[in-house]
Length: 507
Image (cartoon, rainbow, N blue to C red):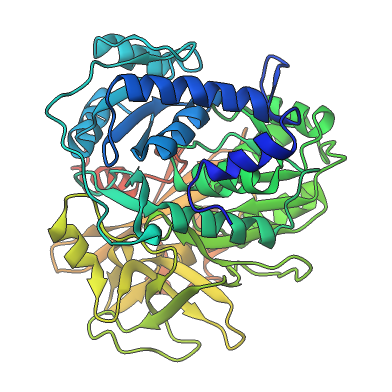
């Protein structure tokens, strides 16, 4: 049984070194042996730079084989890989760098113009890895001991929070947690060597690292690897490159549907596709039904977070659902719904905060005792800040974030409920709802809608559409049309930005 991330590669280096693993946009493929050779080069350079166990190695990246090699090389030397999406702004990258206290920073310059720009700005030099640059060694960086003893406590990676709510936090994830969830993820979709996953989800995110890269390594499945998502490339890969697994955030599927609609494609060619999944964001029923109609198969869903090394609940193969449930609890995970103020467990059907514990839970935020203490609860529970409820059969329904809940006329309004209603209108591609404080202490509901191509906003018609769907106190006071909702690099809507727009004085 593998206990370190690089052990997942070692098996295939021994059993099937020439089997293809990564397929690139230019038509090249890399075998396990070729990835192993890249990992050897990365390991040799890390050791030459005196990278020590417990040092952080930051990688400013978009997906490429060299990034995967660095993740595995860090595992070999005992360093902690710290991925940062190259499309982050300079100030964001600098903030993550300061948080990580990295021994060395790498940039995937050849695969990403954005990474190349960061490398030039930070005075990086060529790396021994082809197409990469690196910083000089930071002598002042201090190695960090594992926060908990034993093999299961060995840290593999830092995953940075998205930075949408304040200063960055770095989630410590262990080898054991990542490998355990990779096995759970692979089993949930019966992943095997015959599968090919479209791997555009950034490996700097827990979704791309655990669900895509490590799961595929464990199963011997192949990756059609891309630095970022392009609808036309995806359609080509589905039709001609044997993609059998497509996973991504809801924003991916929203963009793909818009492209299909514009191109007049009712049913894309996807002869090998057998598994569709969306996570890393809330799912609305209108999107689910449109995706399932386009592909003629079930869109699976799950609920997870960086602090748990992946998903806590996942829908099951062979059990289609006509709702937005995130499915059922996975092996060795625990979840309870509690009253936020008291921590009192709530029965099925009642909404509350989701508390989580189990094998995948982080040991804490890196060098941030205060943030760790604020998130943890007695008994080893992690207070997620997410709101949801459990059905009688154990299926989970996530309804939003505790901090995003809107108080209107003394009632709780969950943005997801309003968005679900808005998204059923034929002119709406997707939407996001925020609260705007009013002088009397109430909150006005402000809806931002991204319209389908060629549609125009008719606010009166949209309000009329909402009347039979929402109680009066849930209906938006304002509806604002946008060409595109603001999102971060992982596809999550930047509600903080929307709230700032909603609260800005009207010119």
